[in-house]
Length: 294
Image (cartoon, rainbow, N blue to C red; front, side, top):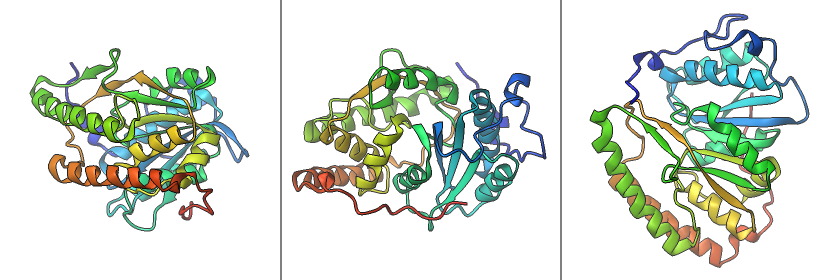
C-alpha cells in the first residue's frame, strides 16, 4: 500500500539547468525534441488549478521523456486562476520540448485535450492526468500495443492485471467510485455497444494520425468526451485494445461529483447516440476549435 506523500503537493520551479532530483545522469544527456517537424511521442496533460502538483509532474515527466529524446510535453491550461500557467511557462523557457497551450477560459477536460492534440506533433499521442495517478513510466506496453497494430491503447482499471496502491482509509471511497463506474460502463455498453470495460481511465495512447482524425470530430467538452472518443473510433473502424494500469491514489478527491456529474454524463450518452444515428461523426470536420499555443 502506498502512503500519502505530502511532498507531491509542493510546486517546483526549475532553475536554469536544474531539472529536479528525479533526473538521472543518463537522462540529462538527452534533450527533448527541439523544433522537429514530428516527434515519436507527444504527452498531453490538461491542467486546471494544478499549481500544487504541476511542478513535480513536470520534473518527473521531463526526466522520463529526456531518456527517450524524441518526445514533447504539452500542458494545456484550462483557464486556471492560480499559478499553473506561470509554472509551466517557466519550465518551457528552460526546455524547448515543453510547451504551454492555453484554452480561452475554463472549457473542460475534453476541450483541453482536443486543443492539445491540435498542437501535438507526435507519431503517438498520450494523454494523462496532471497528478500522475497513472505513472508516466507505464506507457511502454501501450506503445508496444500500437506498434503491434492497435490504433488506440486505453487503460482499464477493471483489467485483471491492474494494480491499486492506496491507504486503507481510502478504500471505501475508491470502492464507492468503482461501483458507480461499473454501473456507468454497463449503461455505456448497453446504449453505445462499445465493448470496453473502462471508458474513464485517464491514460490513453493513440496513433498520432488517428488522434488527429478523431478529436476534430468530437462535440463534448467535459468528462463524457472519453466515451465520445471511443464511440467515434468504433464508427471509424479503429482497433481498440485495453491494458492494465498502475493506479496510485494519494488521497486527492476527484473533480467529478458522483450524483451531479453522473446525471450529466448520462445526458451526454444520449447526445452521443443521437449524433451517431444522424451521422454527425462521419462528416469530415471543416476545422478544429483549438486555440493559440505559446
